[in-house]
View 1 (tube, one colour):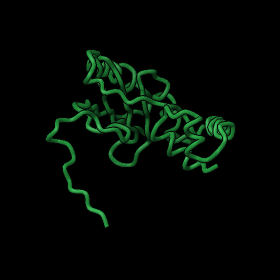
View 2: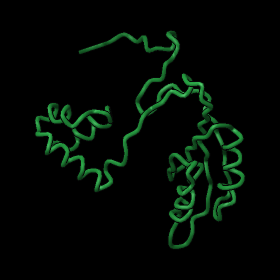
View 3: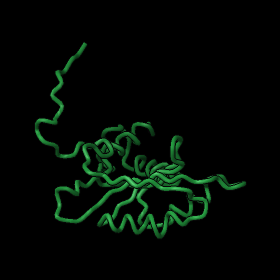
View 4: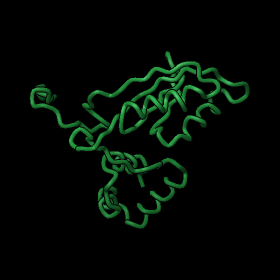
Length: 163
């Protein structure tokens, strides 16, 4: 079975059924399920996520990115600090970066106050954290490859060119 093709199919449509995947891949359902199970056990497939356009709901929702500067620790580098940050349930994603900040924290909350309280009372006091920069998401145009519902004038109106 072509594992790369399976991964690409699941990345494009996490809701694809094993039956549909088997048809596309030309494999038996049993082989596809076995492949998925192995990928999950190896932590290559780490989850299946839904993209929600919160602006279309009546639910309060705030997304924020927080740049975190930190000093590495002897023997563990940034790993121990990352483990402490990642344990907070408010943290949706955490990345080690190159650039002006060592970490980028993605946070989902109900209000800006919740984000501010998290930064002030939980994130900033962590030993090794030297500074934070909070950025609130004002509008989403594209999330995980999915276009959000945009006004007609913002849609792609480029001409199709083929060779």
